[in-house]
Amino acid sequence: MKILVFTEKPFAQAAVKAIENTINASGNELLLVEGGTREDLLEAVKEAEGLIVRSDKIDGAVMDAAPKLKVIVRAGAGYDNIDLEAATAHGICVMNTPGQNSNAVAELVFGMAVMMCRNQYNGKSGTELKEKSLGIYAFGQVGRNVARIAKGFGMRLEALDTFVPDAVMEGEGVKPVHTPEELFSENDFVSLHIPATPQTRKSIGYDLMMKMPKGGVLINTARKEVIDEEGLMKALEERPDLRYISDIKPDTAEEFEKRFASRVFFTPKKMGAQTAEANFNAGVAAAEQTIAYLKNGWNKFQVNK
Ligand code: 3PG
Image (cartoon, rainbow, N blue to C red; front, side):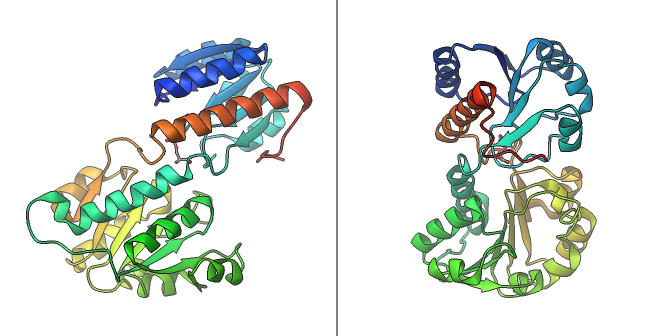
């Protein structure tokens, strides 16, 4: 059977080789399209029974163009790029690969935090992470890795996650809090790990930012959609001590950069999961999951109904 790997942002070469070996060894055939356009996707998907993607937008039109498609695996955690309802209507199983790239994202959180504390390495005196407090918004796979690394920096930790029992956080030396207001008002840094859903859309804005202690830093390695950009700008305007660093460029990035210069930073392209290790882990997991579904309907990580 044909398995299409379509990635606008390519995996590391070693990961691609490993995916290819895994697919070949299973007796299936790899179709590889890297850095392609939507037209390329619509053409390539025609023959595919399995599809592996990253943040690439997969909507009903892609599925219409893919009459043989049985399974889509998102090599990564967030699946907000895939139209789940359309997939269900087309009888297609959608899975993600939870945990496979979470360490990479968590490490970037600290790369970003240090960068901000050291004034983007401009030579001026900065501050340290030790003994500062970090609020982790969502205590899933990435959030837990963030907690593990933060302990090495000597940070105090709080987390908010309504799906995780307090005892689990306490067991990892993290103080549970139960409202976003507590999380923002009690921490020098807040790191976002919530998914983009109708409930979280634009949920982080003026009110929460204004609650942060002096010098507060918001770190976003989650999704741009969870930010109310207008509200965040208003808070940055009124509080010259606040800072925002994000691995996902806001829609209004140029305005942020023009108005707040050294107090904001955005990576040019989402880089959280862009490591050789994360590409390898998520890519091979996606290949194995696709093969297993095509072979015997294995669907442990299915995310659509
Ligand atoms: C994820 O949801 O797994 C991360 O945001 C990584 O996304 P990417 O594969 O597009 O880099």
